[in-house]
Length: 170
Image (cartoon, rainbow, N blue to C red; front, side, top):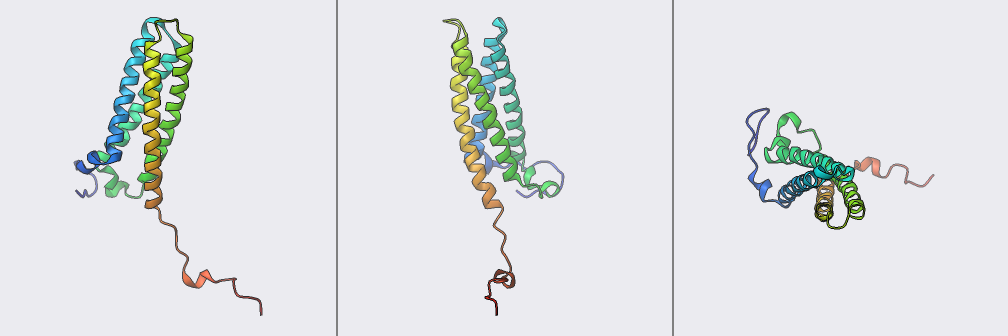
């Protein structure tokens, strides 16, 4: 649906069915589950690594929710923000979240080796979530990078400038 200017958002159901939409939903679910598991694990023992994991997961969830809402509500097609390079925004979001999930993966691995035997179940679950989320965000980075390059075509040089300076000296 086309939307002109600012108005009620038109929900783009095709985005929900697309690969990018499904990946965004999976990423939000994984981030939220990682946040909840880290909160449950970190609270009774006051583990700093899990607190950091928790905050990074929350930041990733909020960022992904914002990008998901922009694409689902078709705000990226609005005349008010049409000049923004949305594939580049999605690429930068996915690249940033990939880096943040890499940090979470390191925190999860450190947490597994740090905790006492029998109490590292939350850290193991969060490490597995970090690996899966890292893979989904990497897939999104690849998709967004391709969309970004399809969005910005290579500029063409006018014909009369193409051969400028290629003639041999007379």
